[in-house]
Image (cartoon, rainbow, N blue to C red; front, side, top):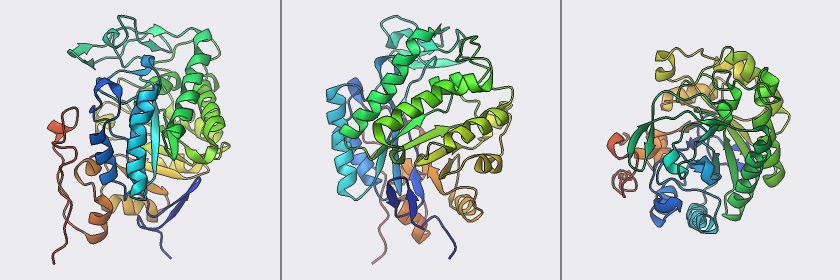
Length: 360
């Protein structure tokens, strides 16, 4: 039998009813960093996905770099997220929480005037989104080696909190130029201690975080997201293929629920990305592979049938189509997303996209 997007998939501790995944999508609709009832409605509407991966969620105050994002380090935040997970589970859905530390992609306005942290004191090009508007990124403070165990502990505790909040598992955000990605790439990691220099050292923090989160949750409830070809947030590496092949070989031994790869996007290529071919990554990783990056239905089906991936995550299509699974299955026209409502705001462009109603 041919495997398709609608085939079940054993993913860690779960049997997914389909291979259509809702990608993590920052929406900035959590005032005071606490999840809301509106967020519960938003995720509940999308519960027919094989798996929902939540929006990126800071693991500590130091990890925040955007306004109005939900976090996972206080009791109030845990209670807020419980409303979300209960809503998804009431619709027989499955949801993982994405664990996030932005590193240098922040601003002192989020940290009472203190500098954001990074592997090295190298500022990103571009601007931070702050509560008072766009401001240039600052030169971050390089983390002292003695601070790194605390970072690892924050990931472990956040994973524990996610399970308390009712999540089915967690995804470690190691992509898109945030802290763990900053440690991986030699464009942002100029350290000379055991967390910098060669590939093994630059992978050390992510692997330590992965081990700690696995200890907290069990490997069958843990995924990791990576962007080997990504240039977003001013990222680059001298030899990304060697870096990520090594990393994926190491991660293969953890028996994770999945690895989530962001393909090279048009913007990455435009910014001079050294593209790491998906087939190379597929060969390097022994386990379930989710891919993401501007896929439509036809391209996603090819990724599954050609055995380049086990599941496909969709981002903007899920913003505009809460019933994406049903629309794909019935070949129904898709709603078009409104980019002006992606970040911040209320239910407009969030929970008010129409659900397809079959003709009677």
